[in-house]
Image 1: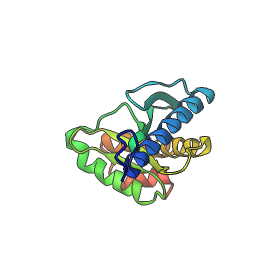
Image 2 (image 1 turned 180 degrees about the vertical axis):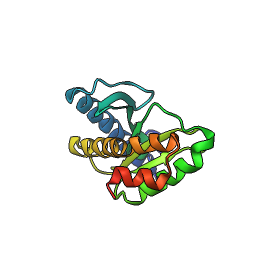
Image 3 (image 1 turned 135 degrees about the horizontal axis):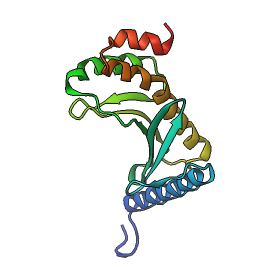
Length: 170
């Protein structure tokens, strides 16, 4: 090992490269969101927040680059909270919904009642491309568009299995 204090060790160099790739990914995400007309606003370090409206559904979309681990996480978060007395039923609904998903998930925080559709991508060592970003955005949006109405029905007292069958057409 060199005694030169300005020379990076392999571990430091790997961290520096990871950080550089993460920062490039953040720039790619920022550019794509602006170019595609999302009108993002800052949600904190590395996070962009957008409002999504379609087919009567309105929710926030959070796109975040976790720079140090080279990951993209997209969350679709509706403006609702599951009340404590409906969380068990909502949890069943969320589990039934997620079971059939190949990519992404529907999540419920049992402590707060917050719900989200989530899609994540680990791009470690690879450039994050606009196509990969669009894919992740699309997956989170489609999950929320598909399952939000059923979740609202469960909150209103409908049985989880009945709500799943209604949204999935079974």
